[in-house]
Length: 166
Image 1: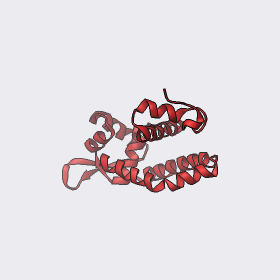
Image 2: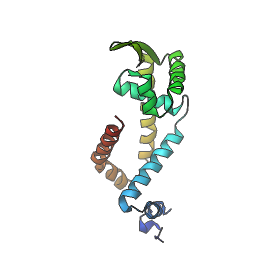
Image 3: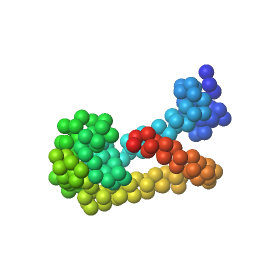
Image 4: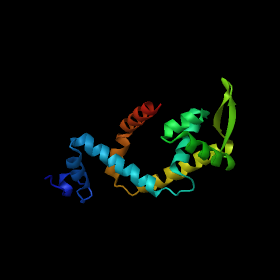
């Protein structure tokens, strides 16, 4: 079994990193992926829920990619088209999205973010960045420096992830 003491890579003394490396079977890559997954999961769990995560993700997708068909949104979010249609109706009643005719196919409808939807996405992102920044202020300087040094790698990882879901 792997030593789970702080000196073995547990960092915080809990042995989390060392156990993760052993469980993943992939060494540094598996341990890093597991740590990032755990961090993202913790942050997502702590976000106040005023609308579902699927709705938030859909609004963010509309902001980044522009108007989309319901079928495209459903596929991207991994839900059935009737589920997405119902969610879009709820978001429309809330004033966050509107439906418009697709100029390329008059039979089809596009879902578009409203100004209120744009403001919602921007404000939610701002609040979550501030919350995460609050955690960062609690890190020792050497850990913060390591994260800053890792920013190019994190940006590249983000680009790879965005490319795969396109």
